[in-house]
Image (tube, rainbow, N blue to C red; front, side, top):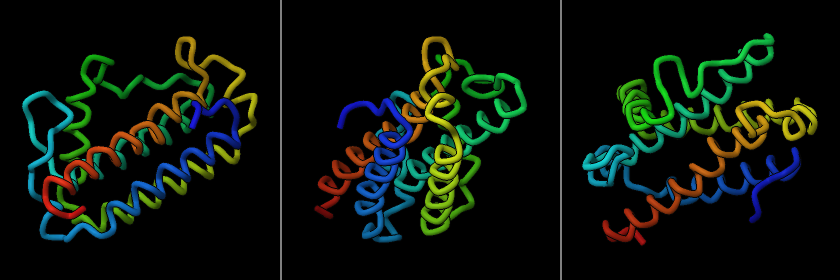
Length: 170
């Protein structure tokens, strides 16, 4: 699919990529979800399937935070307070830590909730607010949402499918 350039395309892209990823996640045996045997978001580190899901939940909540702050007429710290563009690996590790007490099923439920909230947020915005106003540099808010939802979902699905093959699950 091409990069979304409208509200309806963004909603469809998020729904489609989320469903494909979710389909690949639901049949993973719970006992394998905590094993750190997948390349992490920082070079030379390993993460678990649960860490990957925590990463997606963390980014989803960050996108919602950006919208809340922007709705108050302010610009949020990007990518988050205390994290610059070249420190996204550190931010990923913070997301792992933020959700380390949650088991895989809880993370899957949180993922469903955050995706639902993102879809509601996008649905409640105008196409103009999503795609016709620069929000971060040259990027409109809709593109930033896509960068941090459907794009990572596609990447996560590729990681999960590779991991499943390596672990005899595909």
